Image 1 (cartoon, protein in one colour):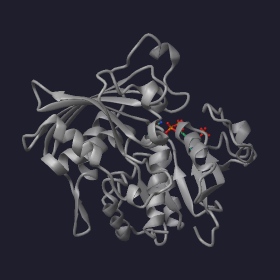
Image 2 (image 1 turned 180 degrees about the vertical axis):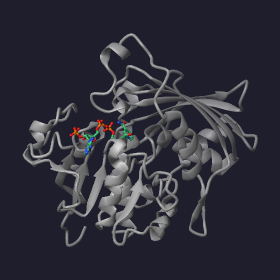
Image 3 (image 1 turned 135 degrees about the vertical axis):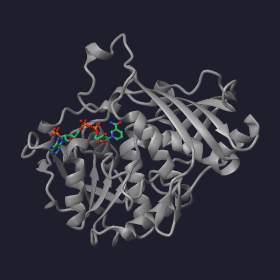
Length: 348
Ligand code: NAP
């Protein structure tokens, strides 16, 4: 904040599933203030309240309802744009904004694997922000938030990697409907059903953690050397992705040591007491039937990752279950935490 003035922000893709979450979380943010909302031509020119089909349980704030939605063109009166754009068009639009000096914090996949773009989970790889120095956007910049499933997985894996070394990871997901955007999957496809395919998801989960958990050396990220295999399913849960994970570790250890490592884990957001930081990034449940999406997805502002059911495995060393909120920690909340970290570290 400059002279106690909040920083002016805009939301690209403001009418979508992630865009709505951004609005909910930014409406009372202590550092950021929503000044601009943008979406497709279909929505541009309308009052936000008329353009959006608001699907969140919290009421749409009245000052937001009356903002006129604009096109995603870099003439918005704000310093940061949070992007919840459809990935078919996000890449080019985000580049255009960065070239015009905006700070772009994106949830879309398009720039995640660019060599000079941080794929940031603030508790894990805050030092990757240094990549911004290599970007050719002048005062503008692009930082990305990982895929929603990757975020929960990477947070669970980081303490294992640091304490015991990680050889290989097998993951099977049960992913919520809000992860498919709005209106998303047709009700006739998902009621009484599970869909064993999410386009592009397995590839992202197998690739993104390697960059996030990688080492920054001489201005480049050296990917972590871990084998990851993923299978993804869409299930009839509204919010919260559940992940069944098996891991092979480099060193022998016990369940107690692993739980201790998870409980001890924290990072820069906790040290800096960032507004959106969970008190504890990981909550471990001893109950044999936890975590569950409906009950635990909102723990610690929906920003904590829940883990449970850790036990030795017959094929791998250990297996366990992860739950994380896909539009909160996995999208808008995670992106806002990235912006808070960038602000605290003086990037804008
Ligand atoms: P969504 O509900 O389909 O929303 C897409 C948004 O993009 C809408 O605001 C839409 O505006 C806008 N848009 C579409 N075409 C456009 C165009 N040609 N020009 C400008 N704006 C356009 O999608 P979502 O689930 O919120 O996801 C948004 C992004 O975040 C995607 O890249 C997704 O992969 C990623 N993501 C989603 C989640 C999740 O849990 N949902 C988690 C992590 C990452 P109109 O309403 O005007 O069409």
